[in-house]
Length: 154
Image 1 (cartoon, rainbow, N blue to C red):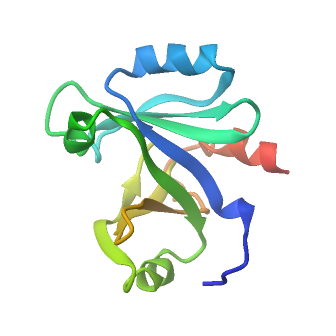
Image 2 (tube, one colour):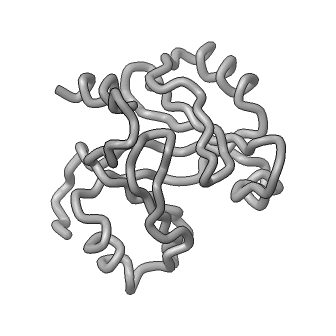
């Protein structure tokens, strides 16, 4: 992967929250606006939404579903908050291979229902959790849940 800075690769910063409704109220009071409303990802057993913070930073709020096991349990025990950076990729397998020496794949490629894309998570040795997400939609949702997001970047 190129070492040149490409701001188009940054999709969002992920925040883990225990209560989606309370978090949304707080983020809206701080100047955020909704791009993708809270949506359930039954595969991950989470509820996610996408906000734009003060017309600049995409923020994903991620909350556990009230029933069943949650991949967020350990993060919530530490108080939640800033959890990961999500980067777009045009070649998920190659991107994962580039992380081989830097970290460990903690979630192998899987379908992400909220944004209709394939995603994976890597934990780096430096402690950063990186979500890699395909830029192209998987095509299971119509319209593309990220149409509003991409229109902001044009």
